Length: 333
Image (cartoon, rainbow, N blue to C red):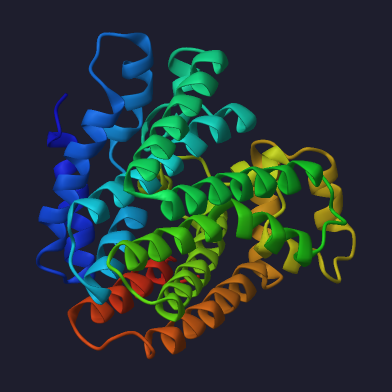
């Protein structure tokens, strides 16, 4: 299995973090992932590897590795833990794409589009199983953390599904969904890194809280980009969430005090020009700006937590990665 397509992703996130050793550590993670997936031409191995080698930011394994470096050394257990969290992330994407009926991901056809929903679900299950197996090989506590994380991912998805096409959804439900969908996995990524490095319990809890807050920033920014992002960079059409009835923070903020115009657009299941009209309303009514402000507040919490990390290169790298997450929003938004 070729790693050429993933080398640039590893190098890119290392440059963002400004952490010299990170690219080498991430490349070791890529090799671990390749071994975990297996070898084509079996359908399972091929479908499981499809998104893995299509690229990706590798933010979660990077967080694991940097947190391990912050509290000790990056050894084999840290590499394995980083691979496990990326496998969980990938497995969740396979399932998400079936739920969302998505056709593209990372600029390539989704597994469900290329093969079928059945293949996508089963390959997603396989990735989660491989992640669990790797975590168990590290120890009982990493296996427990990962199992709990997978459960929370499912809970987050269910909360989101329960409120599809519901213009009365409140912000509390939104946060409940994104905490499970995104924040918990990023928190566990940091938690596992500190844990395998031998950090004390207060430090592993600190790392987990930092990752959780960063996950909130990441998801809020992703939700903003769904509305105003550059399609060439995001790899998907704008307004997909609106079409699917997923009303995220920018939309919920714009709906607050709505005169009925936006609600009417959404109730009619927008498509084509009506999607652009809905996006325009969300922007003009301050939904995007308000969501960016909320992300900045969570980023400030990340900064406060980082002050309690050991000083040095890893802490600086985490700070730079945090800023990259928020900086993905276009400057004019």
